[in-house]
Every structure is written in structure tokens, then in C-alpha cells.
Length: 314
Ligand code: ING
Image 1 (cartoon, rainbow, N blue to C red):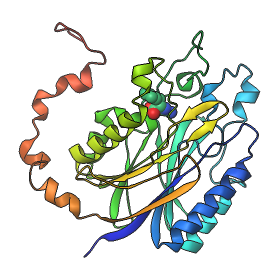
Image 2 (cartoon, helix red, strand yellow; image 1 turned 120 degrees about the vertical axis):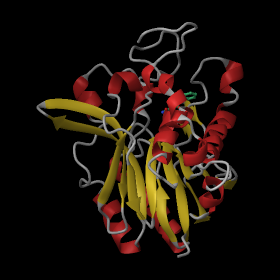
Image 3 (cartoon, rainbow, N blue to C red; image 1 turned 180 degrees about the vertical axis):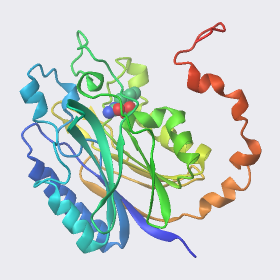
Image 4 (cartoon, rainbow, N blue to C red; image 1 turned 90 degrees about the horizontal axis):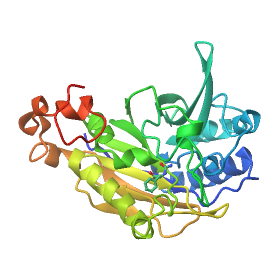
């Protein structure tokens, strides 16, 4: 059976602090329609696609902070996305800030969901690699307080069978950590989707931040190639509340080649016909995990958190 079909990345330009959920959903509906008109069967939206990237601000008041989170999904604001997915027979990946009460506790996550062509949620992931800090950093024009506002994800790296394949999700900073990609690939994921908000002043070192776009694409291309997976990376980008977020949304093949890339820092849909069986040529040769991996030598990767110059007993 040929497994070739069109997929899309729905890059979003800036979302202002005043923009409503409906403003964002209306922009996403337009892009979903544009993608479906190109025959697309799956579209990826950015990380935290329903609001401005609020972790750049110090928000002391919990009630104010809560206004940035969704307490149910779908909800009245996002239901039109689910309804259009069903009407246009297109699945989607959506990132949003999730507030839930679990076991009597209120919990906050940076979350992404997979929705199938019937408009049903079929997968959920909560961001594991949270960048930045849990305390405001002195002297920074923009903060990066994801560790303060979100808990580390508690769902692992799940893979969802859908659209004749197996789809895994990562969110933004996850793309810089090879372990997440590999856990998805070890569950036979063939397509990885990833939304992101990447400011071009994150490290504070000019020579490092000048490479923000290069490091983004390097992460996507290496993640795809080293794990023989297709990937769809979708930016929220442009000058958003004074913070410059990189674009370069991209669809990348298991070869590591970028087959579609955005050209603007605004709402922009990019599409590509992907051949899901292309990965086989890599998985049956130099990335045949079963023949070439040596997990008995990898214990340190799961048992040690930080780099140590000497052996330790942790
Ligand atoms: N943003 C950034 C990202 O990983 C960052 C944080 C930027 C880390 C640049 C390193 C370098 O793309 C989020 N939201 O994770």
C-alpha cells in the first residue's frame, strides 16, 4: 500500500497580549482551509498557539496567570477547529497551556494534542524539556519562565497510530534533546510533529543567539535523520510583544533533507507530499536499530542527569 500524502505546517505570526482565543482560532481556521484545499491530511500548529508566549513575562498574580491556560479541550473557543477538521477530513496537532485538576491537585502543563480526521483527540503530550528558569533573571529584557509556570510533562513520549502511520509529538526545546526523538523512534514513530516559540535572545550570548535559526534547523534535520523519521516543525514567529521569535517552519525527510520551509515571519502554510515508506531505506540499512544499537552500553543516558568527570554511584 502506497503511503504518500500531503501534510502541512501552519506557521503563525505574532500573537499580541490582547489577541483573544477566537482571534487565534480564526487565523488557524483560515490556514486549515488553505491546507485542505491543497489536499493536506494533517496540519501542525505552533506551541502555545492560543495565546501570546506569556512565559516571557513575570506574572505574580495566580489569577492572572490562570487566564493564559485552557481548563478544557475542546472548549467553546477551540471547538470550531475540531468541527472544521471533521468537515475537511484533516487531522491536526495543537499546542496550548493546560490547567487541570488531577487527584485533587491543580496542575499546569505546556501541552500538545493530536486530533484525527473525525475531529477526536487521539493523543496528548506534555512538554518534558522545559527551558529557561524558575526564577526571574535580573537584567533580561525578556524572561523565559516555563520552569516557573509549567510542571515537567508526566505522560512520557507517547506515539499515536493514525493516518496510516504512527505519530509522535515533541514541543519546542524537546528538539534539542536527542533522547525524546529516540524514545519516539524506538516505538516505531514515523512522523514527529513539533510546535515552537524560539526567541532569538534566549542565551544572552550574542554569538550564540545569532545561530538560533541554524540551531533550530540543525536540531530538526539531525533528529529526523538519526531516527529515520519525517518531522514537521511549526513556528510562532515574528516580533511578538517586543520579543523576536524565529521562523523557519520546516518539513524534514528521514534523509535529513528539508522538503518545505517557510519564507516569512507571518501566518504561512507550507505543504509537502511525504512518502512514509522512505524511512524504510534508512531503517533497513545504517539505522537498523535491531542490528546496530548497543543499549547495554547506554545505561548512563538514563541513570545520570548531569555530566560528571568521574564515575559515581548514583
Ligand atoms: N523555546 C526555546 C527553544 O528551545 C531556547 C528556548 C531558545 C532554548 C534558544 C535554546 C536556544 O526553542 C522554547 N519555548 O522551548
